Amino acid sequence: MGDIQIWGFSIDVVSIVASLAVLIIPALFGLVVTALLGAQMVPAARKLVLSARKFVDQPTDSAVKFLADQLGVTEDQVIAALTKVIDEMGKEPVIVPAPANTPLLPPAPETRAPDAPVEAVP
Image 1 (tube, rainbow, N blue to C red):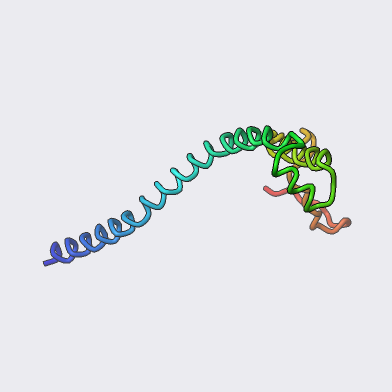
Image 2 (cartoon, helix red, strand yellow; image 1 turned 135 degrees about the vertical axis):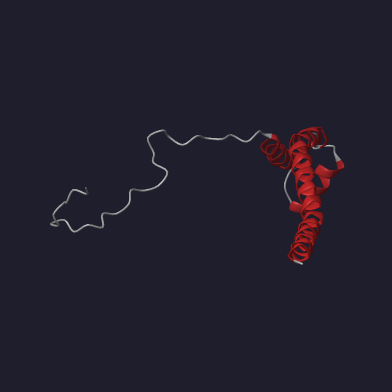
């Protein structure tokens, strides 16, 4: 009789684990795929932004003329601003390492009274 109760309990546990796995495994798979695609999209997006630069570097371009008319500035100023923005967007990020002698956390404050005796722990 005791074997039947253990068998029923183990079936319940396996059922719960299987139900959770059905939910968790596809979610983890989706996160992994999204991360991998996102990692591939960043360099591709930079290349796309840099390739768009050739469309805004002439004063005869219709987009440059339209922006210059709307903003009330010259075409050369629009070209300079757009090329500066596009060049900044296309740059690779620069990771600056922290100096080696800088601690990650500040030192902990002293909790012992300055005049308290120091005792050795056996």
